[in-house]
Length: 136
Image (cartoon, rainbow, N blue to C red):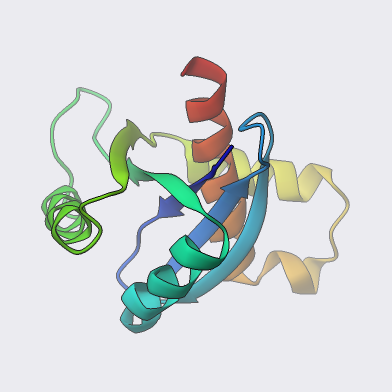
């Protein structure tokens, strides 16, 4: 079986999570610079046998677009063009950053590590992926 990755898209940092081979459990993988995403994905897709990419997209509570929604859609279009053999899914990511911050706080991570924004991005990507895996 193949693996699935998720992306918590941001203009500075991008959180990445990956599934196990049974596509049951999501785990944080890394957080990378926005500028490095395509090279990173080129390598990851081949080395980990990725079949699907799940991208979280932000919307307001009423379902309307946020200021990053159009940038995320553009990113997904680029993914579809570049990785046309990979299935790309978009999933609502409302509240994932808040849930991630609370989960990190509850886990007992030190205050210094909690200030690392890349940790929130990785945990958010993991929440997005686990939600996808639970509902597919």
